[in-house]
Length: 602
Image (cartoon, rainbow, N blue to C red; front, side):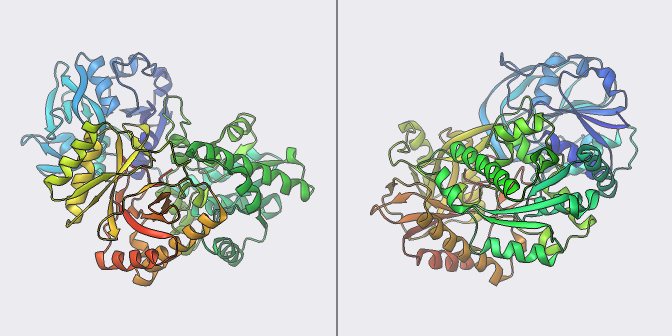
């Protein structure tokens, strides 16, 4: 390892985000498994232990080499699970917490603290995602900061430069987390020599080495990830050795394929093929309701269409590698590292793609990067801002924004106690609550959840909704998402509607999505939102109409996110326009952060 910071990956959703943040400080970082030999890390000037989905007292906790903690004599920082494991290994004790913490919390820093907490206020906002807590400290440690629900939120032995944070300083929603990491890195004797320009050169060399004499066939969605990969492949190999394929899968936004082809041609991409495969995709998802089943079916169809295009163009599959604009969040959320839990299987991480990767037939120049880094790289390679700053759009497209159900399995299965607890917390702030009879995907404590959203309504404000959303999802296990009602004033008595992916439902969602996006565009605030999924819910009162959820978020990296607090008059206009569509009887607004709710609902 070259001189820098070693990050030990215990499978947490944010493990590589730690490395990303260290690189943002222009310091080299490298990921190691928890079983690594400390001799392989001789260049490490500091070690950070990541979070993870396991518990330190779990029989199935990840294997790890205790020498990484007991034998390393330099600065060390444990985060979340890494904090708990470090304290336990050094003689402390960990136990399940009385209250889980997911989302924002207030960190109260002890008055005399400096060092790793230098330059911070007495109270800082931090991002939590845990159920266990350190109850007894190792010898030489002291409490440095606490939250209302976690008395050991920051601990350490400053003499040995060993620290543990129960919260996540690496995520964007710990506002001064970078300052904390910078304080830690300053304790390590590291050179400050990492830049995105150097990564570009490294990436071009890596593409040439991996490709050898083979060509690259790239699936191009039109988003920033695939476009940056497209540029890199063209720069590294030349346009005659690269073929871009944009597939209209039937799950695109309104006029999306036409617009994508136009701006790619304008950007100079002439080695592009556009394929309408919407009928094939609709057939492959026919009758599917479960999110993972839909994602896997769509991923397989992408590969089938790619193979058919190769055959039609008489291209030898053995001479063409599959190029992908995969980012690290795709890998980690798909359970793609040894200790990570699967949150949702991305279409570029289905089993067939994993088999191709094992055979050395896939090339992914962005697989170590996050969205913010890819945007920087896009600027570095000369892409226009119109591409670099486009809102992300998932590979499965509207298929994961159009929820499906058989109409039977999604009846609310929360216990009466859970419903009563959630209802009580809402009523304390003057709001009414109803648990909705559908499910959505979430991420809590580095694990996937598939639980119910709860609808709240009444006179309120954003701060109250944010606090309530965090409290309910932390305390009621059967609820992982909170939405509020935009229209009508009071909710109808919904029941699940038997619904699958059909062209009619997708067309209805396309129209609702177009209204939502154009409302932001006309107001001049599209750039204030990182992404805004519009979601169709199979909830009805008459067996025909459905409901829509608006889900705008703000985030630089998509590993954590806050719901966007859009102007209420604009939301009222947006909701009224959407409710004017035939087939829509209610519009909700998602007020859930990530965690516990993923950005997409599936």
